[in-house]
Length: 226
Image 1 (cartoon, rainbow, N blue to C red):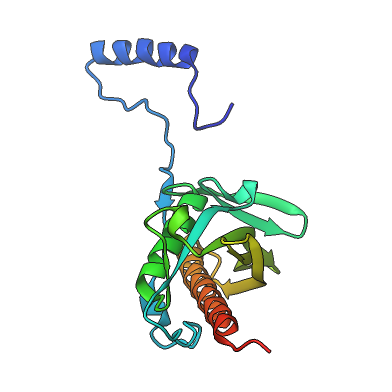
Image 2 (cartoon, helix red, strand yellow):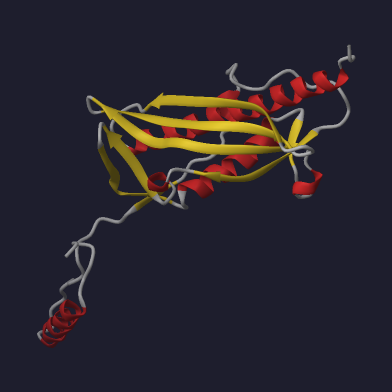
């Protein structure tokens, strides 16, 4: 039985002992001595981009922003929940005593939405539904984990991103993106900021991909036919 769990029989035994101790006039704490689980979160932090060249394509010419619809973002099953996933060669585990405050896929999807709101200049996520969008952005996360090599942790985020023109459902661009950020040390307090940095830079990459693709498609439309 896990040390975090107490069976009903144990509770009854504890209750009887508590009654006896009260009768003796003592003060005894009988609750199990369990360290609290620490909750963490990550998101999009635009301050990490202030001195970075990782952001943004050149603005698309024209007055109308290209609206983009995201059908959904999926993380690998092992990484999608509230456990902080670690890998070392073929070993997969979670950091004991630490969890994400919300499932990782929820935090990542919220970060993507905020990233587009904060730094995109020529595209925007459609708030009028799929029917109003020009493109669908497909994001398939392949890795979202803390990878260990020689006991040194590195946060790894890897994904495939594709833009689909909704008017004819044609895939117009696809790219594999990878971000690796080394944690300052093998402590959760250093690993979590590495997740935020990797997430922020990855989302800047996604925004740049969407804007570059939209610009290229506009140039194709505007180019004269032969």
